[in-house]
Length: 225
Image (cartoon, rainbow, N blue to C red):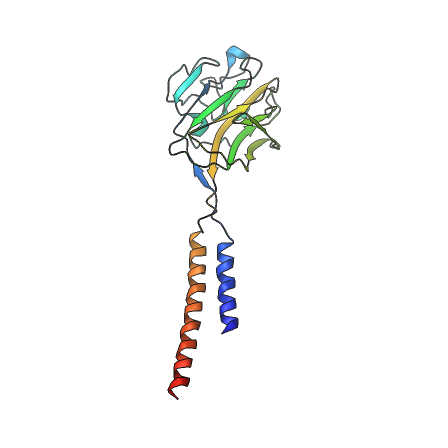
């Protein structure tokens, strides 16, 4: 009986030791400067072409407000900027020429004030045509340590513990171009077990209950005898 309970408790503890995966949190809108392009010396135009809010989507650095666009559309660039961008400015990246648009800052708005633990940013660090990872990344004004991708890919900024209805992401100047294809936000649901762990926990409780019933039945038989 002691071994059965010990095994069941171990199964229950094991279930509780595996928290759920992080859940993506989606912004309701964002605002910030439009990308740059040929007017800033680029080969193509790297505007926020799908932006749904106010502001000129075809003017370098124009303020964009009240909508969403390339930075949160779920389209993650799968190649370097020079293979996927175009003159029309409809490519997956938004690119800022930082000597013209200094330290571009984007404000993301959220419904329900979610707790955000991690921000994932997809960058181009090809080092071709003056395109580099940003000199710094600041979340709500606080500089974050990060490792730039070798070519293009994600940068994870974790342990943030952000709360509130809006948060800023700022890209520090690098004396060249900063290219971003997507910004994602995640909330950790560590207090809620995954579906599989619920099954394991219930199995543990069932084993304890079964053992207790057997023990009670045995005691009753001894008393009856």
